Amino acid sequence: MKTAIIYKSVHHGNTKKIAKVMADVLEAELLDLKDANSDIIREYDLIGFGSGIYFYKPHKKLRRFIEGLDKVENKKAFVFSTSGAGKPEFNKWLKEKLADKGFEIMGEFHCKGFDTYGLTKLIGGINKGRPNEEDLKNAENFANGLKEKI
Image 1 (spheres, one colour):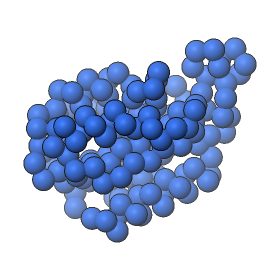
Image 2 (spheres, one colour; image 1 turned 60 degrees about the vertical axis):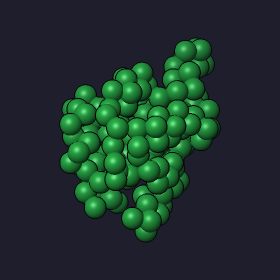
Image 3 (tube, helix red, strand yellow; image 1 turned 90 degrees about the vertical axis):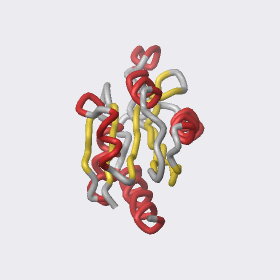
Image 4 (cartoon, one colour; image 1 turned 90 degrees about the horizontal axis):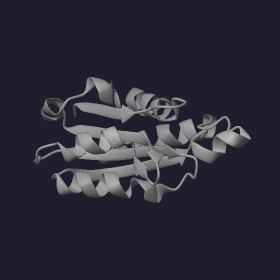
């Protein structure tokens, strides 16, 4: 199954670290959002979409990218995110919008990430060192689980 991972990682590279681990396991093409376009979706059977979380949603550029996609058929997707709060419900927007576009959602992953956004900057940030080795191992396990499903 031809796989790609499209991600948006801004401040500390948290999401990129997770995306890289998953790409290695899935033997996927790893694409920074700035290097992706909507035509690329046709080339892959499984596509991962990931971002840091900003005010309870994925990065606005990833949201715009997904909103601009055409409806698809026979495409599978998974979603992943990192955030200071570390809540998996932050993936809800991604799952709903991708399902609306016709993707079959195969799974989701979320972990905490080092966060110096907004007021957390005043105290030196939260979750220093995250994602850590355990988070990366969990991302690897998630990707292995996807391989078993597909």
